[in-house]
Length: 258
Image (cartoon, rainbow, N blue to C red; front, side, top):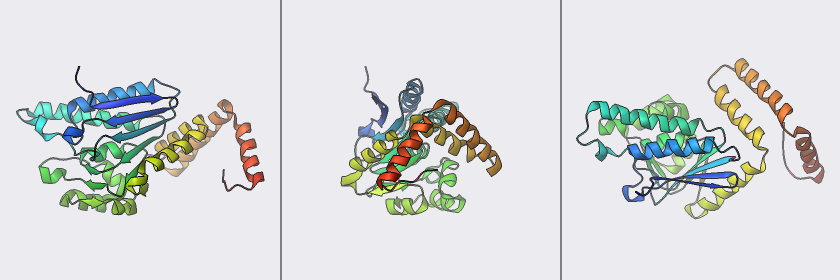
């Protein structure tokens, strides 16, 4: 049996999805696309999972698409391969629970598509970001990148193919948190613990509302949120949440709630 290119680890309420092709700098090929789809299908069928951490083995997060696998292929194969990659990205984005991406090193092209399909990115200060598709004579990252950082900035990065340092990625909003490489693992664990401490239904509904609301106008978004609030009142221990919040406030701890 060949070594998996994507490793899935399920532990209690957490799933870890790990790009596991370090010898090829985690370059995305067709088999990795299929294994990402399978991993997130498995997570979708595991209702106790409340968070997903997507990371990569080795010093490079992902070196982009594996161009070598296209040698000797025809246009139909390349189109089928691209469709497979978009199915993989969509499976990540459609995950009902928070998906945190951890970027420890270089991220190129398709690696950015994977990362931007997650809910947010925690990056090491040693990370770098590059979207060189036009420089390679192909087209990619034209949709998620502009939605993450704006049209003009996306065009500049795509047109030039330059390497963007982690601090700039943070300033542009592509990265949510930037931490020293020595602290990356502990910072990720702290974020995971924080998310897992929240009621799972409230977290799922929050993700749903943000995702759906971002695709519509404000009035429709508020209607989506009101529907989620109603479901939360019907299906959760919301009174217990109020009591816990009141206890925190009464103890003088700094917390805020709606």
